[in-house]
Image 1 (tube, protein in one colour):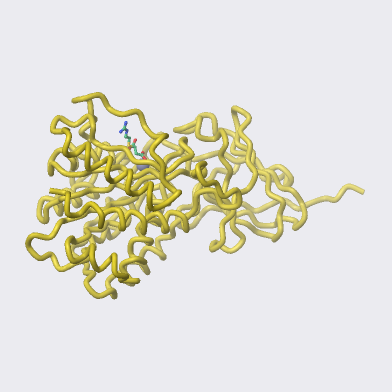
Image 2 (image 1 turned 60 degrees about the vertical axis):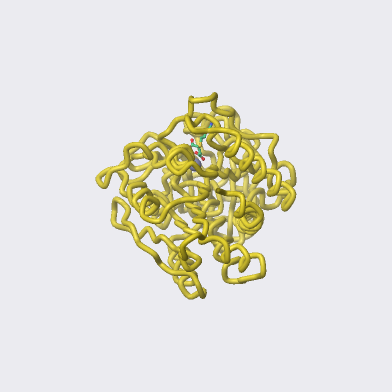
Length: 382
Ligand code: GEM
Ligand code: ZN
């Protein structure tokens, strides 16, 4: 006897929620569409809740416009993440047919959240900033404002004493790249642990931390832009209080405090590996920076299997860097080690975890290895 299932209820009216319902009347096959960033044509990020599932039943969720997303090649080999409690996230078998992405969930409970990557909630961000300020030696140095007026805290770990190296880590310029703030939580966790390596690092250097550069975009479920439709990682030659106050704030603080090393933390839709990109196309690029970059990569490779140097972006030709990118602009301005750190929306295929793929927890663990790498390099930065 055919079992009649009641229609599902799909909603996304919550922090980082974003989906469009095409037709949810067929519970075994829910038709959905990806929705663009508020003021830009970019789209790829999704995050929604489905209620009314039948445990034991397979429910298919189809993102019917996936082939028209910002990075259509990113769907091949990609699997969506799901959670029944918004705490534990797992990968759900997904297949791209060249047009739509089909997510096939064998429901275990009556409701589920589905997302492009494990979301980093704004409430967790607020708790993280509060927790950080309770750590000895960590202070709120300044606070910027996003287009919509959300706080952008700049934290400093260390006493700012003269002569100490100034190591900057900023994250989530691209709001859909939630792994970036998971990484920053890993930095804060290590500061809280205050182990011998962290103490040694902070004896020689201060850490300048912006855990989320694009709170408006993250909250609205954007992939790439802020609330004025600006790609912040293309605003570092033209930042303005009107269009990109987030970058304007970071640059102002860098000018005030100085920079001896810079890591811009991102996520990558297509490449299933953790990697870095650097400043090889900058006008000031030379052997000193090239050697520092290689030392960073070699050291990090030695500290974790969740990093590699084989796969990554094509290197820029000499003098051909796009100076609007944070990594290039900061590397040039401060003549310092400057890297873009990329974590995958898929998995790190060098050390795959089929159940989680790349995840918040792995992003946090990577941060610890990056801090240990910075400790190794701090004495050589200048
Ligand atoms: C990337 S950074 C692109 C750097 N490209 C090269 N060739 N160095 C961006 O902003 O497009 C970071 C990201 O989006 O994650
Ligand atoms: Zn990015």
